[in-house]
Image 1 (tube, rainbow, N blue to C red):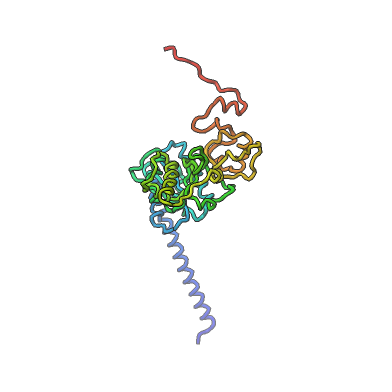
Image 2 (cartoon, rainbow, N blue to C red):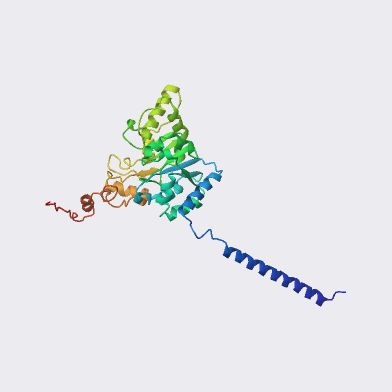
Length: 342
C-alpha cells in the first residue's frame, strides 16, 4: 500500500522534471534566436527593399476598389525628398479600400531614391496598401506625358478607378466632397482655361477610369494631342459623338469642386466658408493674402510641399529674391554688379 509520503515524493519529482525540461527548452530557444539573423532591426539594402516590395505585390490577391498612382521618374534629388510625405498624404486621404501604386524605373528607384530614403524603404516593405510596379525600358523618360499616354501603364494599374497624384500638390482632408462623389465621371482634373473649362487639367492630379483611357488609346477617333489630359477628354467626346457611347467628362463646376481655388474668393470680395477642394496644387501665387491664409487653414497639407506662409516668390523652382524680400519687409538683397574688365 502506497503511503502519503511516497505520493508526495512522486509529485515533487514530477514537478522537478518538468521544471528542468522547461528550463532546457527556454535556453535552447534563446540560443537559436541569438544565433539567427535579425529581420526587425536591419533595413537591408535598397535592392532588398525593392525586391521585397515587388515580391509582396506579386503574391498579393487583394482586389482594390481604386488606386492612387504616382510616377517616380528621374527627378532631382531635392524633388525626390518629398516622396515620403506625399505617399503618406495619399494613404491618409484615399479610402481604405484603395491602394497606392508607385510606377518606378528600377535602377533609378534603387540607387537614387532608396539610397537615402530610409522611411520610404520601410514603407514599401511593410505597408499592405502600397504596390510597386517596375516600368519597362521603353518608358525610360523624364517626362510624364509619354508614360501616361502609354497603354502598358493602364493595363497594369490595379484598379479601374485611378487617382493620379504628383509632387506639386496635395490631397486635402477637409474637402467638401469625397472621392465617391465623382463615381459617375470618367475623368475630372483641376480647373483650367482649355476646352471651355470642361474636364480639367491632369498635369498634377486627376481622377479617371482606366477602361476609358484604354478605350481612347484604341479608338480610331483618337485625337492627336501631345498632352495626355486633352487627348483623353477630346477623344472620349469624339467616341461619344461617333459611337453613341456616354463617357462622362467633368463640368467646369465639378473641376472646381475637385481642385479649384479661384472660387474661394467670391465676386463681392468675401470668402466662401464652405470652400474645400479635394486637391490643391502649385504655389497659388495669384491668390490674395486673405484667400491664401484661408486656403492654408482649410488645406494645411499644402505646407508639406511649400512653406506657404511666405509669399510664393520666396520658394519654388524660380524664386524672386527682390519680391520675396519686399513681402517680408526686408531690404532688397545685395546684387553683385561687378563686371569683368577682361
